[in-house]
Length: 205
Ligand SMILES: [Zn+2]
Image 1 (cartoon, protein in one colour):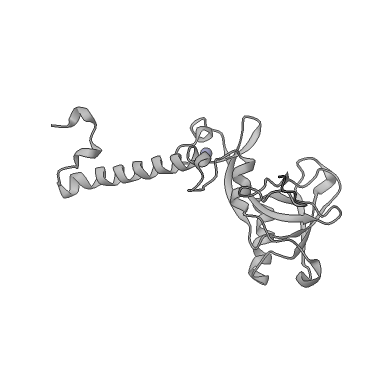
Image 2: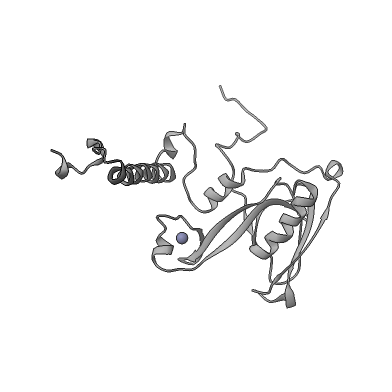
């Protein structure tokens, strides 16, 4: 017996919202739905903006310079499309100032355009508070989860079998290395015999 429904199934985790930057021409006008911005050092590597994943970052190892980018979710004024806005540190300062003044970015109306309407022109950002009661904006997405989807980083979930590999394993590896390093550093000063499990097999007695 079919079970019909007038709603699509609830998404498994966050949906991927499209990523948008300030357009070379015209203006981008939107209302912010995120309470705060999220920033990350990034590289332009392999034709894409990718997150810097120190201490094991392929782009860093290849000497590619990094650049901070900020992200927040917003609803476009004309289309009501929910998207992730990517901006540079300079625009980030404007959003930080707004946050300090109002305690949240949610409900902030912003307009972004490029100076002289050049593709890489400096971003001119204007911000003003909107009436949150009248704006009726949707709840903000999990920014970090959205960025993981955009960057094809596996999700930071613990209970889904399909998400056990990738990033979680990387974090685990890093944590184990840190632990091993810490134990390794303690050994000479404390003169304690190192635990067998952290020694390579060849050094075991
Ligand atoms: Zn890096």
